[in-house]
Amino acid sequence: MPEGELMLPSCYVLDCEALSRAVLGDRVMLARLKDAHRSGIRVVTSSMTLIEAYHGRVRRAA
Image (cartoon, helix red, strand yellow):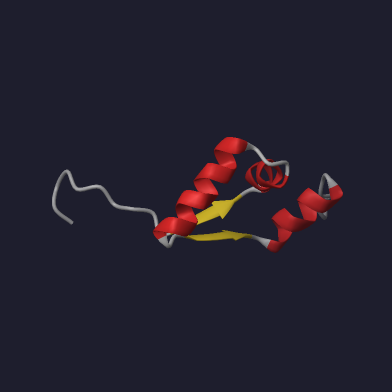
């Protein structure tokens, strides 16, 4: 890649906070997701993030 050239993201990975903001209708987050959709950027999250968002917290094994 030539020096000074910006690399566009190819994927957004949502953590629990970002997922919560999207679900609650946060305007900034929804705008980012809409922009990602228009730009063809994949948006993903992990199964653990979904569990954490659903249960509010995750107890980790000792």
